[in-house]
Image (cartoon, rainbow, N blue to C red; front, side, top):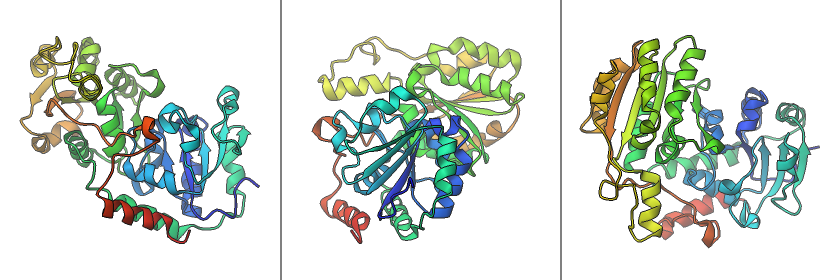
Length: 372
């Protein structure tokens, strides 16, 4: 028996290894059968799209997902390696009230101890889910409803211009889109706020490769794989410049790649660290310190790709036709230079989220701890 029947607040935590094993349909089936809340890692956010979506955990994870993780009493991790960005430097603080069950096909990853009393299964994620599906797991409808109430209550928090832009993009995408995202702030904003319609869409994230500039090559490859189907490339101004020459590939092959540039005219993720941790001592991340941005519309047009620069993200709706046709395009979306990425877990202070107003914090915690 894998599942702990004594659990009152279990969660299923899915990583990208679950998709690689072909376990995604089983995960969806298990969640619908048991009503156990599904959380994901950043690399696997598209496993919990549509009605299954609550959020992903970790350093820049959704506040609701991280708060649920802190209050659950059982974590079943499937195909999630539980690295530093999920667990933090002090593993004892990870899901502090929960028993941990892990399955991974990588012997090295499963050999690491997250908790002293954790249960480990060195096996394929699909086989693990098949065994779990066969067990008499009760329904957790009330617990799932409480988690969804928490997610709904927190929707108005931690909303920054980058999140607003990604949400606007989400609203205009067709059902089941393929979206390639880059590395940096745009990656985290997409993981937090890109809500796919239905459950067959994909969000292609570099993950552990950490290769800035990957979104455009990802989109090109995905479009070719899909027989020149439409792919949405969400990138930053810095990431696009890493592989900007691939615009010629898009034009030459006439691939319907829709390039959406979240342009704050700085190397946002690095400059943010320099702002917070180094007293605004910038180096090659801002205009004043040696980083500049070209006119992306002129560059795209020079490659023969239609392009436009918006004044505000709200103008994106005027170009919905560009997002639906079979030709490539580039849309430059402006963001403030000091765009914030949050909420960020402060691992060094003990896995602490930036605080909410005390009354709100208490009401959320009380809702999650109900019937404890």
